[in-house]
Amino acid sequence: MAERIGFIGVGLMGHGMAKNLIEKGFAVTVMGHRNRAPVDDLVGRGAGEGTSLSELARTSDIVFLCVTGSPQVEALIYGGGNGAEDGLIAGAHDGLVVVDCSTAEPASTLRIAADLTAAGAALVDAPLTRTPVEAEQGRLNTLVGADDAVLARIRPALEAFCENIFHVGPTGAGHQVKLLNNFLALGTASLIAEVLTAGARASVDLDKFYQVISAGGANSNMFQMVVPKALEGDLTGLKFALGNARKDLSYYRRWTEGLGLNGLLGDAVHQLLAQACHLGLAEKFVPSLLEAQETLHGIEVVRRR
View 1: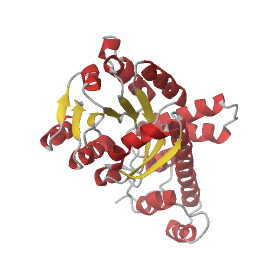
View 2: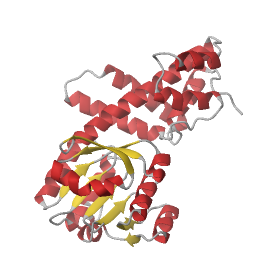
View 3: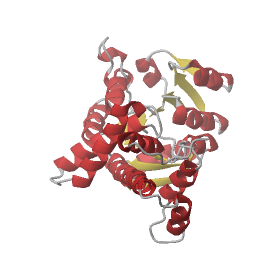
């Protein structure tokens, strides 16, 4: 518990992560957030509050980042409009470990890792799966890209908010596996939205359809997260914003293009997500792909309460 923890990004996921670190006895300093409620709550639980990225790095042994994606991570590492002196790298020191829990582009991750190594620090990519509910419960999954020694050092901190810690390879591997995971999850959600729309257009009894799929090989955790709630008018079965989903698929497409793959299905899923965002649904959750289908086809799929 001697490790001093800095934490940046105490939003839907980050609040629960930081809360569990505090409750497990770690000394935690959080950075201010545009939404003061989670910051004030964590300070009330015993966290300190930082005001300078470079100072946070200097006074921490481990800094967790839980932000949207690569542009935000790069701004935190290198600094914003006021220059690099505002970034974490300006306060980097021997032994500092920066743990990036975002979903980010692997090429950016490797570039940041090289720059932090040159400054005496280390980068670990540890993107997350599951939802804010599990974050509050301390039951997230994390996909870690790191060498064995660094992972062993940060494992006690990860265990404060994770139920499962998957060591998937060296630095960069965590973000690669996360992009694969998110494409599979979002691709499944896209299939679900289209199949329910086709069923509704054909006047299929969707409750009966749900029973059929639930008993067969096409069933999945994603199907069970989305469909039963959607059929009752609740589009919160997967609390992940469509805007973030679109971002993740754009990362996946660029990454697979760099691997020399044609990525036809990735392109199609990205287009569906982009279409939903263009319809004004970017702040809504992934099950609102059904709302996009309703708008595009002029039919009702989701029962309105």
